[in-house]
Image (cartoon, rainbow, N blue to C red; front, side, top):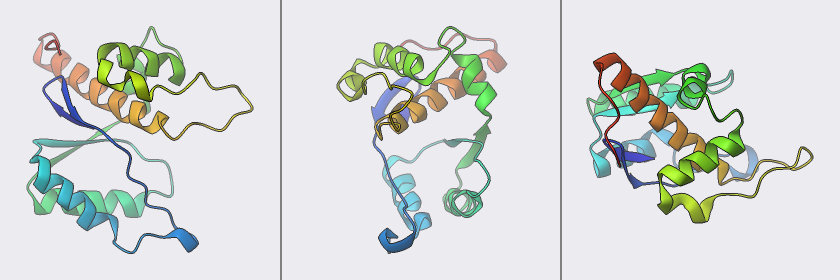
Length: 147
C-alpha cells in the first residue's frame, strides 16, 4: 500500500515464496526498488510473527539504505483503529467503503472451512496504513485528513 496522507496511491501484493518456487531476487532489492519508485517518508509494518526475521531484516536494511523510517505496529494497534469491525471481513468491507478503488478487490466473506483469499492481504496492508495514520493523528492531537 502506498499512501499520501490518507489518500491511497497504489496497492498490490508481493510474494516471496520459499522452496521450489523461491524467488531468485532477494526481498531487499525489490523493497529498495519500491522505495526508489515511491520515495516514502515511512515504511510501516505490522509486527511479524516468528519466522519472518529475515524478511524484517531485509526490509530494515533497504529502508535504512534509503534513509526511510520504519514503523512497527502491533496487531492490537490495527484492532484499535477498527473497533467497530471485529473481524477481517468486516475490516475489509470498511476499508473498501473508505477507499472505493479497492471495492472490486473485496473477496467474498470467508466461510470457516475456506482458506483466506490472497486479496485479503491488500486489505490487511490498508488496515495497517489506516492504523498508522490513526495513531499518528492521535499522537498529534488532530483528526485524520479526509481522503
